[in-house]
Image: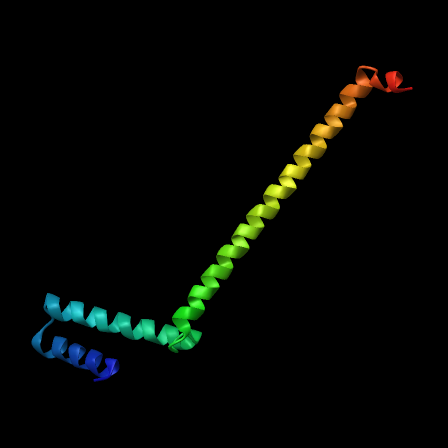
Amino acid sequence: MMREDMLARLLSQAATEGSDLVTLRAVVEEASELGANRVLVRMGLDDPGAREDLSELRELLGAWRDAKRSAWKAAVDWIVRAALALLLIGLAVRFGAWEMLK
């Protein structure tokens, strides 16, 4: 039986016999399954290889985040090293180390 048919029958049952808790839960479950399947079809993720595709995309996204984090860390390390080098040069000039080298 198709999901649309099941949902239509549950709604019909709820209209004729009244809607008890079990019927309402079944309606909600069928409607959410139907909606989820529609979303997957619209996104193109309804084929059998979609699970593997999503796993690969997650791995790729994780690698991208790791690379981005490493790049930021390297940039911050280089900025700190440059600042410390400038501080050291400034201290050397301030205390007259430049004249000792001449």
